[in-house]
Length: 564
Picture 1 (cartoon, rainbow, N blue to C red):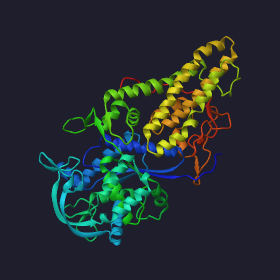
Picture 2 (cartoon, rainbow, N blue to C red):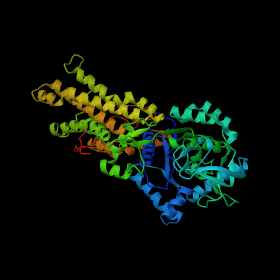
Picture 3 (tube, helix red, strand yellow):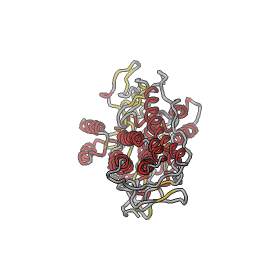
Picture 4 (cartoon, rainbow, N blue to C red):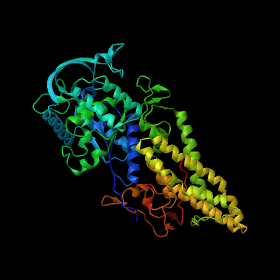
């Protein structure tokens, strides 16, 4: 039985994706990032709610629907399914999928608007200024540049001059409260470069924000008015909708909101780091705990654009290379938070070297040897060797490999807490490299020949080392499951372990506390000593209870080929 500790809650969100066009690589990137964090925290035994969805209102959507001869609702129904299909194809496990055309969201957005009116944060006036339909954003004259066909926004989007009656949010009143909040909570925005960007923007001063449109009908209507909500006020509210707002006193809201992590692209940083926390403050709610803005992906060194014909279709990418290769490359190739460049050559190089030659080769060599030389019977862990044994160095190496996950586990938690998925994978792959080195040092094929000639010490060293490598591979499978779940499960199954790795995320939680989630299947798994292979503070490996060792391995099968 593990120590009884309180179970933390986690609320992980992606932005809801705008449905004016098909899903692209950026949508896949953010969704998989959220899935990696959610899976990791679930392995820790945390109560996780992971949410994504679609943003279905606004002028861009209305225009796209008209261009296809569809009513807006007909259009968004088709497009929402494309995004739902993507998360399934990408093996992204969400706990909720929000659509802003749903009634529950209309209730939440209307409730937030009413609350803002009650606090005096909203007033009616007249707007005259620049608006970019592509960005669904208002821009100040000073932010614009001259384009080939007129003025353009910093994003390159064309802008148009808009004049209409409009409700305004008193954003200017929140300049100092936001600066004070971020001064006291510097961890609220990551990475550090984005934090500095937000502080610089706040120091430049804030103007009241137009939060309604009177010349558009496709949106959430404002009570007692012919206006509809500004699409960003509508969209941002989705983070509250998923927790049952306006019931902010309910257990789901109370437990999860204070542990919220918003994952976004850097292009929507201002909306999330300035407008959103100000709206929440005005409504009497706390800002999200953490906001992490990642970079953009280029294609072969160029910015992706339809005109260049280099936009990467995430469905085609997964279909061509396989979902786990894609998931692995996106987070192993570039640090989460920086811009990345997708190159087919680099993709093949990384996946062939690390997944096929590194991980796949190690799994195949270990399990094939056990199958072919030991009739698939897994040797029992025999403890340490006599100090003066000629094979003592191999025994010591086995101990190191066996304890690898325990040594790394606290660092893994730190990396994930900072959304540093790259460093997490760097640590895991470093371990795989050490596993391959130890397999070469162990040279079980040579020890096997010596054992057959009567060298019992050689046999003990061989079995000790192989057993350590199997434990190591089990822990590698668990560590990789958040990133490449299908591959991790394949390793688990080939090791002959029962059930699914995902089973480790549920059975170990009782009455709000982590308990011993170890399992045993007669004839397949043996618990042979009193300590866990590795102990992570919140139960990552200790949820297994005692060491799980197999009596018989499964059928070794190749994990990755090089024909990508």
